[in-house]
Length: 470
Image 1: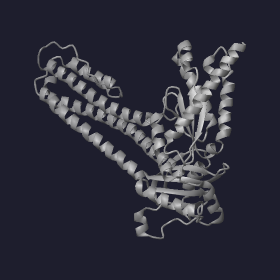
Image 2 (image 1 turned 90 degrees about the horizontal axis):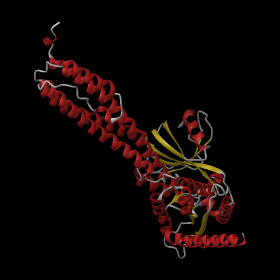
Image 3 (image 1 turned 135 degrees about the vertical axis):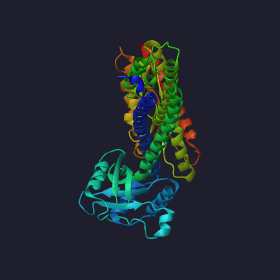
């Protein structure tokens, strides 16, 4: 068979098209999955932030009284105004408080209150949800089941649902009164169609960029393929086959480098092989940049507000929280306390047993703080410093919890003498916000820091006395 009669240009073009198509599919699917995960994380974080800020405006005890009596209190109307403003100022679909009742076909959810935007008020002045009204057949049994399941969890939950209002991504946070009783559920919806549209737009852009890059690469490739490539074609074909088999199904950009075959004919085939190598290197850089960008975005969204060692809030998260708290201080509605905790003997542990044991020591200390203040945000603001902002239930029990924290550390300090990195010791100090003199959180933090150092000095004196008696 005379293989020289086959149009070589057409065969090379066909091979390149197949290769590029497979690569385009792999890159598009990978890019879609990465971006989808990142996008949902961002939207869930946005819902979490809206819920966190909204919870601060809710007097659950007063709301519980309104539900029980069916009478809207002044605080209820203030809450309505606050929810309306928040809906106008945030890109959320709905903000509302409900009580999931059952999974019947009708009247399976009880309304409490819902935000109404200015535009909705203009279209229908009677739009606001009535207190204790039932939802009729607005929620199907399957959707009502999702609300009911999330309501009975003790944490913020996310789920997608489809109702007469549309398809939404919902975040649901149970609300508890001062005695710890579950009263209602605060919900925030984001239009899921918006998420799907962003995914579609991103995918189309990715495909377009990939196609443009492929067309440019194909033109360059065909420029050299027009020459009479008739000599060691078998070696070149084998290298292309290996490239397709080993590189195209991998997500590692390093596997997209074309292996230069052993061609020394000094003609068009050798020149073409060199160009394929250059093309693969350029493609590797493009793919690597695309993947790195996606990975960095995902990584940044995860670590932006979380301490990598202890998984509590980091300094950036603390600053953001303080900004929101300052708004409460400025409005005169703030009620909180600050606990400052400092890890003892960390340098000694690091120097004597290594930083790995020091990290264990820090995490164990942090766990005691988190277990003690279960209803308050904990932040690691330094290598050995932690800050807790006491709110709601923890604020009401602040003195009791402070004693508990110190007791827990006293017990943990007298642990295993052979493994001192397990014997947690922290100095803890607390200060309460005084609206008559405190203008910001820093003033409270400074007093808590002073109390902490007083506690630390007392612990050192106690330790020296114990050493002398020994």
